[in-house]
Length: 99
Figure 1 (spheres, rainbow, N blue to C red):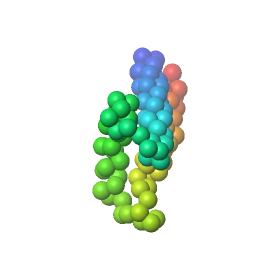
Figure 2: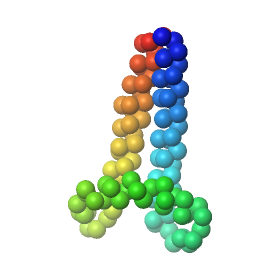
Figure 3: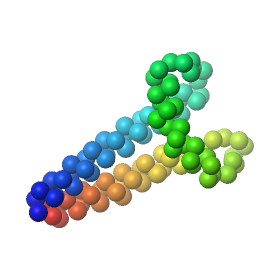
Figure 4: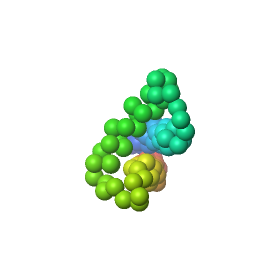
């Protein structure tokens, strides 16, 4: 059982790192939306390419309220934090019980 516990621990750790990195990419997207940037910059294109598929799905389901402000980054931010606290912690706890 310790092999399965180690596998779950590793999956939880990698998922936590991926979600943490996505959170920082999302923060960069929010900052970029407030300042004037060159959209031909490779870093800006990467940030938009990494966040736009998720944000577009949220925008399609989220009504536009709050004076035309885009609230989809806030919703995605809350979802990422939920995944970190619920899914990742549950995997860590499950791995610890299997040891």
